View 1: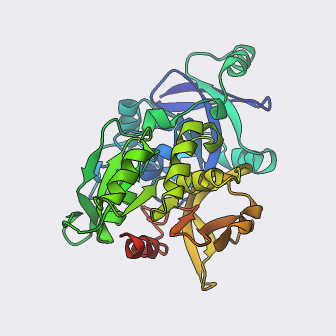
View 2: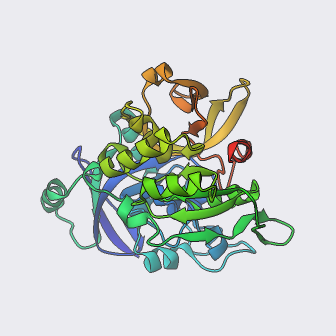
Length: 373
């Protein structure tokens, strides 16, 4: 471990201890209120371009393992934790978090007041920051930060999406067998547009009885429409992903075509936002976003579900002009889910698979399977 210096765009300058990868990194800092699942959070592609501040003070104590990866690597810029535990204790662990971060090039920061940082972000909003194990001078850090592009100026989708199409062959985690269920061939096939999809979202689609093909984010809608008309596929899923959805101008055009083709569509997170934009209702940025596994959401039956969230952007309230609100966040009243009028298209803002939990929204995958042709 060595020293690391941090500079935030509001002028805050801090010194802490580093673990994991070393170097100088710029990104947007947010906070996550989840109590478990740090590996799933770190490997969630939706965090590309961001530093994640964990409000859970003890991180590293259960180690890491290959089964809990949500993608092939870790895309976040770094993590900030109060106490890092190099020694771990869990029967599923295969290694320590420090080595994991080094392998994936992610900066770890510890021995820092995460409560102070969280309160700052809550009051002032998410902001850009720079962290370095090489540069200690405040003015030099401030200069490098000012010269670096902001997160909304970078298209991280190109970094996180799959490069080639593939069929996903795993279902949900089987606790008895300690492995993922194998996919069963289905007469219902859907195509997943990969904007940065989490592995367990694909698992839940398979578990709901669907055959799942994943394609890159630079998909051509005309090709998918032709396959739908030929009855090769029966629906489209738009995945989660990182960054500002308003920057995805070409993807918007393709989603518009899918909407006009009357294909059954289910979307989450970034995909949920893309549907809104493609319908002509631009998203807006939340003050500090919603990141954590403890957000209460009211569903259509007014039953409260505890959900997992990871987003900085939201659909506008006036979307009620073309869609029915199906889910609402009970923390701040923001829209969490919509069903578009006279269409077999619906979406939610949260991550219904919620790996590692909670699991109260998994039923939404089965709802999608019902409308797939």
